[in-house]
Image (cartoon, rainbow, N blue to C red; front, top):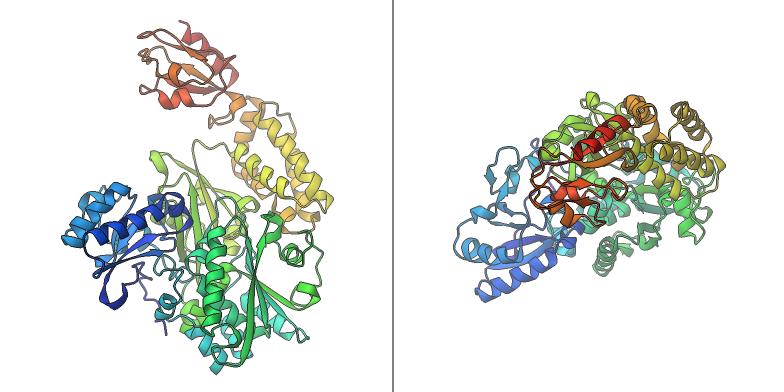
Amino acid sequence: MPETIPAEGVKVGVSAGANGRRRVSVCAGTACVFAGSLKIHDAFVAEITEAGLQDQVEVSIIGCHGLCSQGPLAVVSDGDTYYPRLKLKDVKAVVEEHLAGGRVVEKLLYVDPATGERIACSHDIPFYKAQRRIALRDVGVINPESLDEYLARGGYEAARKALTTMTSEQIIEEMLDSGLRGRGGAGFPTGMKWKFAAASPGETKYIICNGDEGDPGAFMDASIMDGDPHAVLEGMLIGSYAIGAHDGYIYVRAEYPLAVKRLRMAIKAAEERGLLGDDALGSGWAFHLKIKEGAGAFVCGEETALIASIEGKRGMPRTRPPFPAVSGLWGKPTNINNVETWANVPWIIANGAAAYAAYGNDTCKGTKAFSLAGKIVNGGLAEVPMGSTLRHVIFDVGGGIKDGKTFKAVQLGGPSGGCVPAHLLDTPVDYESLAATGAIVGSGGMVVADDTTCMVDLARYFLQFTQNESCGKCVPCRLGTKRMLEILTRITEGNGEEGDVERLESMAVNIKKTSLCGLGQTAPNPVLTTIRYFREEYRQHIDEHRCPALSCEALVAYVVDPDACTGCTLCAKKCPVDAATGTKKAPHVIDQALCIRCDACRAACKFDAVKVVSGPDEIAAAVRAQHT
């Protein structure tokens, strides 16, 4: 059985190789694959074979190792040596110097951005040291395509315990005592949800895994599905026995091909070994799993819309009650939990409710996985105890803000969440505390904004997303978000009017009150929270026609500072519309009538001579200065 995680947290070291061999584990999570990690894997195989080390060293893949901004990466089992941002030419050096020569390749080690120190062991990297991993316990540790490696880590022993030594009531009681709340966003107690489904009459019942993760910047569920698929399967097997369901579905969006592939492999392997099927684990319990690929509609993350999609109908929510626990898939009692929730279940059953409840705070037990994106140093996948502060997640785990910029806000919970400003950084990450700020935990996406982010435009971006994804069934969501989006667009284009802010607030409140499902009820959150905490920024856009973040294209101008310009001509060479002109070694100018504000000139300038200015007076003065 897996051991209870120690107080200092789960280590992220990779599994050792077979028969005592050393192992090179190459991250094959989605981000690293996109960055070319599979070619790195093949290069290791080729170089190790050429060096004659194939009997001593094996090469494997692992799921997302977490620090996505450092990919493609590999970890050598010798001391869990961590080699980030590998290039194909680096592979030969690792094989010759480390694997053959026994010397760590210093120049390829991770460099701590805060201290400049090179760190060899993954355990010692601050990003990992600040975490506590339960849902992600095997993600980035084992080969997700190997059932044997999952079994070697105690896999399916929790299911064996549940199916052969516990009753349905005992399992549900264990879940209730653990304090696990749904990790998909609403935070409803998992054990209570199971209890309702178990109590619903009927011989036919279903369980569903909601893998329709659609928030921009969120990838926790995807990383679990493609990094540790058997954890999800085992959790669902336990849940099926608890509520009396012999059939289950994993609903996963087709945009996650890696997750779909590895889930299919996992189901096939589990069935072949007798872990799933008519006689799961020899217990006499029958449980069958199918995968349903979703077409990518954001609204299908809502339970009733997801059910409709599985049934072959258009993904649209319906009124509740009846709730799915009473009448769900094909009118039968149905229990739905998201990926992360299911992944926690085996650990809780194996280690006990008390061990899980030892993490977190009074209202929210256990841990929570987050995806860190945006203007943050350590972009990637992390897991911390519930109740950790935003400051801890963003600065201790995330490493703070990129390029020495200033933290401005963090958008939590995706387009349905809200923006939390700097003065609330010590807010605990739990359902109640974040709700008080106007944000939500949501599925766990965190998009960090710095002082170059326009909060009005950020609100417009998220509302654009939810407006596009509205199924159109109810008028408040279909038309209300459209009208709000029109106002926000006008403001960012410099055409804001007196009373726009008040109109946005009034419409947002009404949409939240009257929309049919969670999409419409939460869609105004980014607008309401940005107005609540950044109202002055709205006023500057409307009253002064100025974007203080220098972000809204219609409110800014690119100009050349003649005192800083050396006439190097780089801006003119890079400008795609010939707006930047001038002679060599003489100050250049940017023609405002031609400029498309693409930022190419500013990015190319090595002397900080290209400036971005906003506000009618500031722009006029800067344009005049170009010609002096």
